Image 1: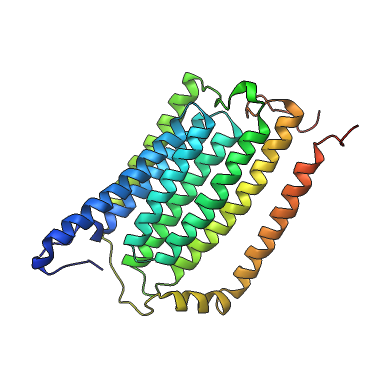
Image 2 (image 1 turned 90 degrees about the vertical axis):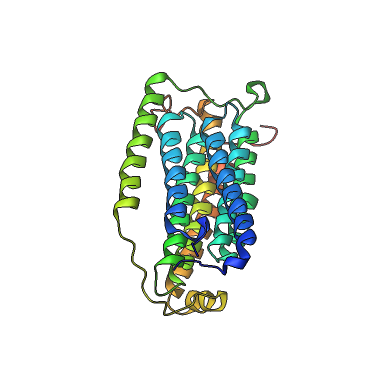
Length: 107
Length: 182
């Protein structure tokens, strides 16, 4: 009797690791605000997946990881709303959303 | 905790494994599209695909409520609002094209991502994960009770943060707009 692939903690950790590395790559290499926001969402998702995986496999109290992941989702939604409205305002004002070209806080 | 099964159920395990690998593929392929797509709309679609894949993994972890919330909040709210922002922030002439990155930035991103992957990957395999005996089973009812008792303060704080974020984004988005007819 051997456990299936989805019964190993490492499988989930590796998926989360790949998502985190992809998000980090996108965060550093993409120049636009919205692309960077998408990468941040990937990173937050990797964190949530890790929380739930550790919660299911290791934690004695199996409500903690679920609660924390719910909080991460709420914060990610708030962060996305703020980031997107900032992106819209910056685009209206500077006519670009390239992070490198917007170097002044005031015009 | 390891899931072990009666050997007579082997076919079901293979089927479940295949579906699991399918969700893993969705999550990773969606992530690759999300960071690599030329057009922003395609990147958002990749993000949604990746989020659906992760929701499938949540189901495999036995947390169905989290999976439902993942689809509802991330795919239903965050991705849709990103699509709205893409349509609002750019004129149609640019055709939602994501800006190109220079080779230096690509190399830097690749280095950072690979470094993180190596460090964390070695940590995953070097650690002996040790499971504690389960004290609380983690049903939805217990999660709800925790949210209203032990984590009540954090819960209220998150609602406050969400309220501030909503009001802040409305104020921000109204500000740059010229008055109609002016």
